[in-house]
Length: 186
Image 1 (cartoon, rainbow, N blue to C red):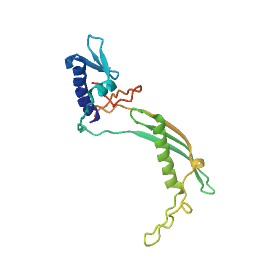
Image 2 (cartoon, rainbow, N blue to C red; image 1 turned 60 degrees about the vertical axis):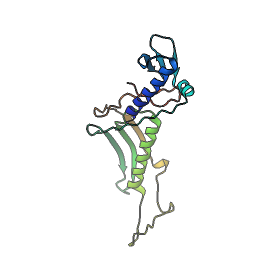
Image 3 (cartoon, rainbow, N blue to C red; image 1 turned 45 degrees about the horizontal axis):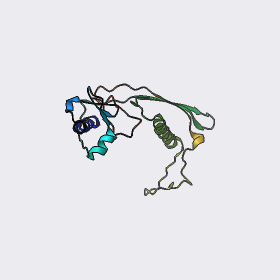
Image 4 (tube, helix red, strand yellow; image 1 turned 90 degrees about the vertical axis):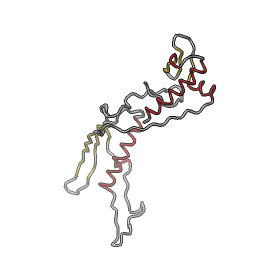
């Protein structure tokens, strides 16, 4: 839907750029955040076009996939258990996932680490206690354990993206120089 809506916005913006440059739309190309006249040395970037036209562009679209999309992953948790005391420690956690195209690796790692630590807390530490009437008895941090940094294992996070054949949103053009709206290559 984002790709289709972006194409609608790009078509509207191309029409405005053509009018500003005094050329037919068919002679206007859009590359690297600029509307360029074919066979002429004139162009406008998106911000210039916005200042000159003072126009709001709007685009809406819908997308229904042809079939399901199946993200995949494999997680391996190494656990050491003391046979005498039953004390359990997670010593290493390795995850390989199909995250797709990762824009911010640090954010992906943080999300995965947070989810894993929450799972460790639920499995090994949190002891939620209710009375016979359903009243929560372990309702404060005085009697409810949460994992802390020393409870967390070493993490190894890997990405193995596999293109989804059921989703056309494969190529996203990101312009890191200018704070532009997201445009998708045609």
